[in-house]
Length: 77
Image (cartoon, rainbow, N blue to C red; front, side):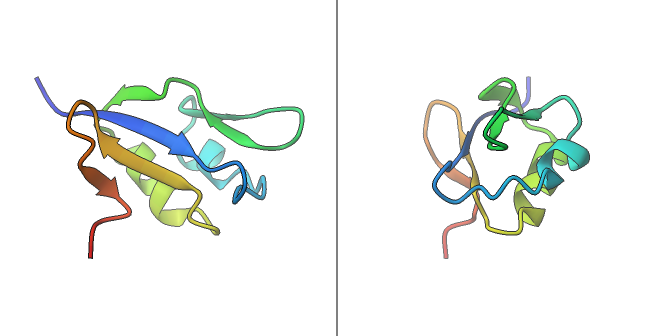
């Protein structure tokens, strides 16, 4: 079994560009305030979700390993 992730969107940063919705179809949705939310905050490790986080124009998406909380994105420096 592969890694499981916890995905969060910082609503204070999200500008509603919908890049995540387009890059990871079915993994993110916009609410009525045009704020992104993960459809399922706990998900299997997924290249499309990582791509969405890496390409968010305001870096509002964080991904951590479920259980340990170890950062996946953004990576620790």
